[in-house]
Each structure stands twice: as structure tokens, then as C-alpha cells.
Length: 211
Image (cartoon, rainbow, N blue to C red; front, side, top):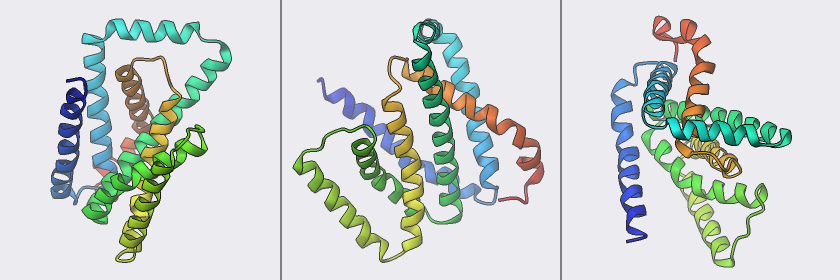
């Protein structure tokens, strides 16, 4: 039962992600930025509403934890959260763009490439150790990606870009400990929304000819 709950959480997550392209593809006529604006703004509004309705205790705890940090840790936390927001926003945009203007196959391949990139970044940046069998798995995965790239090198390139942005997000948040995960994600998406807001008048629905 201890592991069952993780499978129950993981399987619906992959199903939802797998079906996401079915929603994106029919609206490929819309510019990728318009879709990104709608996704980020709607997510930010919904998550802020949930946070303030049901997560007020966690918000207070997060603020108190941050206030209690030494200055050096505060600076590190700020950089990690700003970087996490940037990586997440880049990942969402590249995924939307590739699904709508390149191919669904390239976008799907990205999340097969992502675990490899995450493992390598964790090894080189976080200094996490890998067993020989884990290195063997990484090598086999890389070999598979190389074989797939022969059919379409550009698909693989786009897949690497999407996978790298998400891998960078995961690795950056590995060091961002001590905070409630939902509150941290809400902060990332809200910061993304605030960063995108100044661009909406120029690149939003009113400029529908832009891609």
C-alpha cells in the first residue's frame, strides 16, 4: 500500500499529460504566446485562489521559514525560485510551440529525453552518485535517442530543448528545500504571470497574426 499511492498519483499524471496534446493541436492556428498567456494567467489565478482558500497555514509557515533564513540562504532561495519560474515558463512555451508548429512526436519524445538529462544534471551539478547499472541505463537511453535522431534530427533537437528546460527546473528545485511544494509552485507560476503581463498588450490576442 505504501507504493500503491505513488502509482495511483503517477498514472493519472501521465494520462493527463498524454492527452494534453489533443487539446493543444486543435488550436494550433492561435499564436503560441497567446496559448501560453492563457495557460499561465489561468493557472496563476486558480492556484492563488486555492492557496488563499485552503493553504493559508502553509503560506504563513513558508513566510516564517523564509524570514528565519540567514541572508546567504535567502539570496540562494530567491535565485532558485526566480530561476525555477524562468525554466518552467520556458518549458511550457517550448512544449506548446513544438506541439503546434513542429510535431506531437517531438514533444512526446522530449519527456523520454528529460529523465536522461535530469540524471546527468543531477550528477554534474548536485554531485549525486550513480551505480554502474544506472550508468548502463543512461547509456542505453542515450543510444536509443541517437537511433531515433537518425530519422529526424530536428525533432530530436526540439525534444532536447524541451527536456533540458524541465530537467533544469527539477534540478534547481531539488536544492529548494523546506517549503511547501504547492506554495512554491504557486509562486513560480504567479511570478511567470507577472513577467508575461507587460508583454500581453503587444503580443496577446490583439496581435493574433504573431506566432
